[in-house]
Length: 374
Ligand code: APR
Ligand code: ZN
Ligand code: ZN
Image (cartoon, rainbow, N blue to C red; front, side, top):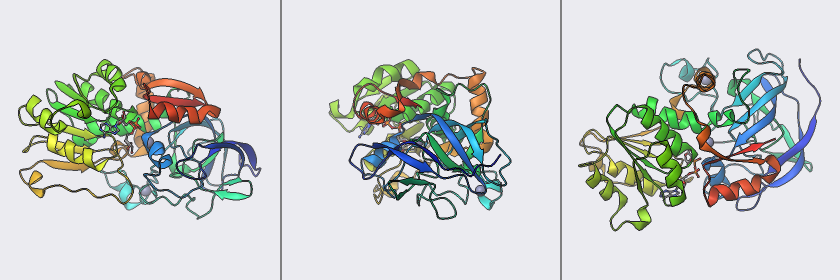
């Protein structure tokens, strides 16, 4: 059924970077043709949301952030056929229209309708569905999950199993596919191989789980926050390194530990220095470095091209190269069937109203993913 009513609800507004979010009443417009209005049930906080709030990654503000959401369809716009009110869904920061040249190609997942790499904060028709105190509020990557209700294009909504536990599956919108796919689709980690993972947050530990599942013989974890080491060890990290406590650059230590460098390195922080360190940690001939983190806007990578010449490679991976709507709901079904268990990635849960506390947890102490419950 289509809806024409505006919903007034609570949302967390990012008016500017470097300030706490402000919980305010917003008006959420009805979905236009091809759009879906969703009642958010849970949302994870991702490193990318943190980078945006810290002002490192630029998006149009004021905005409602959040892109790791699980919810229930409230109403649908004209022409929507893949979901109906009451369906359980995930929201994806990369759409899959299934029609464009990129979607029809067997490889890759960058639908031509994506806006992740140059976020406009607006729907495809150039307008917004959110208003607060009479002002237009931008969305984030077409998702915006830090709100009780959001409007998302049908092409960025994935219908999931009715049995999905809604307090757990929100991390399947970003952290889990981003990490798993970096391992299974981009790097293609092989049994017995050696791996290093820079950054042991929610996405980094999903990478660790993927490396372990692929039969890696050694998984070195690198982080400047040693509180991440016990959970990382529990998920399969064999050696933990804090670059700040080493006498040499961490890449030198990794090379010594592995007889010349690892088979697979992953950068899961979003920092140009650590991308280069990860690249240098790889074996010069067959090493593969996968860049998963999103470095600050307008930053530049700088390294000696001779690093790549002897066949070392550097690849990027976004949403784990999964075509989102075709692949991620199947991952959810696998999770429900207990083919893997990503619950240990969720170390904290907080009510939505405590979102600023949740960001503080992510900044400081022992927190992998904090999930907000609505
Ligand atoms: N060296 C080593 N570790 C670092 C450094 C550094 N210079 N800077 C930060 N870290 C660690 C943090 O201590 C933290 O444990 O990186 C981890 C990042 O984890 P989260 O903030 O939880 O981020 P996450 O959600 O895992 O996302 C990581 O992946 O999806 C991308 O763009 C996203 O850049 C983000 C990255
Ligand atoms: Zn994310
Ligand atoms: Zn497409």
